[in-house]
Image 1 (cartoon, one colour):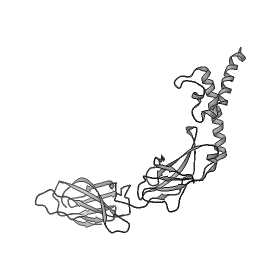
Image 2: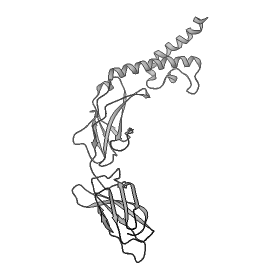
Image 3: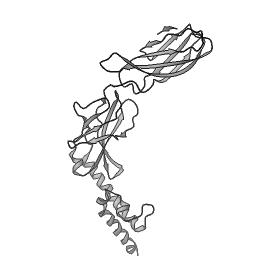
Image 4: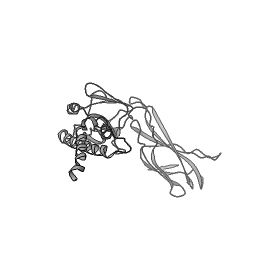
Length: 275
C-alpha cells in the first residue's frame, strides 16, 4: 500500500525537478500547470520538486560566482547629476543572469535602492542619471537568480561624490532656538542634507513686528552653534527667526544662493553677538 501511494508523489516530484530550467523565467507553479491561488495535490508535489531543484542550482551558482567585483567609475563621466559605471563580470552573461544597479547615500541612510534612470551599453558600462549634486554615493550590482529573494550582490563601489551645481534645496535641520535669559538666546542647527555645493555661511535673521521697533541686524556665521545677545527685542514676545543656508551658485563665481528656513521663538529682550 505504501509503495502504491508514494509512487505518484515521486513521479510528480521528478517531473518538477526536470522543469526547473523553464521555471527560471516564470515560476514553478506556472510550469507545473497549477493555479496560483490553490494547487492540486499533483501540482503541489511537482512544485516541491521544482523548488528543490532550483534551490540546489542557486546554491551551486552562488558557490561558483562568489562575490562579484565592485563597479567602477568611468573616467571623465562624472557630472553634477549623472555618471557612468563600468562593471565587467562575464560570468553573469554566461549563465544568463539578470542584473541591476543599486545605490545608497554614504552619509545619510544605509538603505540600498534600485536605480531607475539607467542605460546599459554594449561595453559593460551603465549611465546613471537624476542624481543629487554634491552628494556622496555608493553603487553595487545585484544579480537576480530567478526570484527576487535569490540574489548575488557585488562588492560596493568606492564613495563617489557628484559635482557641485545650483543652490541648496534642503533647509538646515535640527534647528533649535531657545531663550537663555532676558537678553540672550541660543541657536543651533545642522546643515541640510542636500546643499548642492560647499556651504560658505549662514545668515541669521530676527524679525520684530512692532511698528516702532529697530530692526535687528542680520548675523552672518560659519558655525553650527551661536549665542546671540540682543538689546532690541521686547519682553515676552514671539519673534520669527530665519536661518539662510548659503553656497556658491557656481564653482567659479563669488555669488551666493541661499535657502531659507523659518521658525519662531519667545524671549525676554534682545543684538550683540557672543561666539
